[in-house]
Image 1 (cartoon, helix red, strand yellow):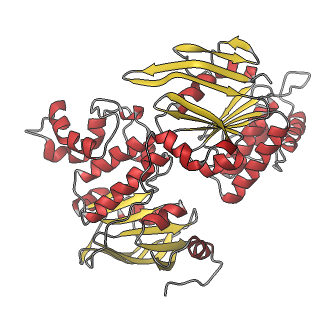
Image 2 (cartoon, helix red, strand yellow):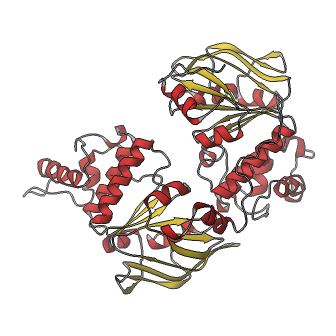
Image 3 (spheres, one colour):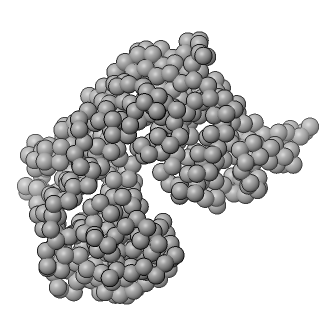
Length: 500
């Protein structure tokens, strides 16, 4: 059988970075093809080239056996290549029907829009993917999973033959993932090709027919999924034997560093109380919407509290702003590093040192060499790659961006570190490095509060686990007591499980 798409020897360089180095890829009709690699391996660059967003430097692309120059995303769509991005590109203020038929709306005899025909066509498209939606519903009011299905429906209505899906399950529940995989299996039976990009290897092995591994912009290999194991793929991705994923050597001390009593914020959380000891990692688990991030934001002074008390090292404190929190020895790594923590257009040196500028300035002046002297030890200690202080942080992989945020806070030597989804959107190798770094911080006496939706991560790195549901802490489990079943039972309110 002839490949639907063949990319041969594709290369692409950006300033200071060889993003792709003679990468080849074949995708066949009716195939689900997994594409994996660490952040920075070249996956996003390859997708952007196939979608016509950026040109390649060399190599060639064949579509249905014929060489093509994909000049822009509209051209890619016309060929039958559709990309379902992690950040969806639907227009939230328009209806389902308007989004589905954007740019090809049915018209009346007089040239105006024909709402009745539009609704009819939209229903036919929705039925094609088994999506029971009102065509008149406003897209911005739909859950993420339905918006994602809507994006797929739109692509198929434009006769897409290749769907490129970038981290499609990152914001979905297990039930929604099951529904998505059912749809992908159905599309596969219809002859649609799917390029499935994900950091979640268990999902790639669950859905893909073949898997391609990239590392450092190079093609490492393509294999039938039945002929490789997850551990073998991880070794190919990182180029080395991966150390234990969850490193745990730190032993919590007796001293309470952070204590909160009766913390309350109307509509977000109520009567939240807990302690974090020196050298302890406390995991905060719960379903989306349980109030975990809201507690973290209030602790760091980003949102006001309606009641409760915060104590640091036994002393009552008042935190009205992040500046107060920082002064008291607290640091906060938010869940969305790109939107809430990084200055993507600025250099690595600036991102690492920005919170330490008052103590680095001399007579009110700052110089690049001075900032380099301050940040380079942290860049080396955290193994941020490439270790170039002048490189704009937007060119770093997700894992290295996260390390840059951590380096910024470590320069301030905090007593308390709050980590909200510390490994979201980063690859398996970088996750192991972040976990090892957390263990090192705990060994050095830092008190760590970690919020994570990754249950194996919560179980693997936490000394104690607090479980939240509907804005309240509903259970506490020691490391020895905690199991996935017990945490989920508490989070979902399906049991009266309690710590002994």
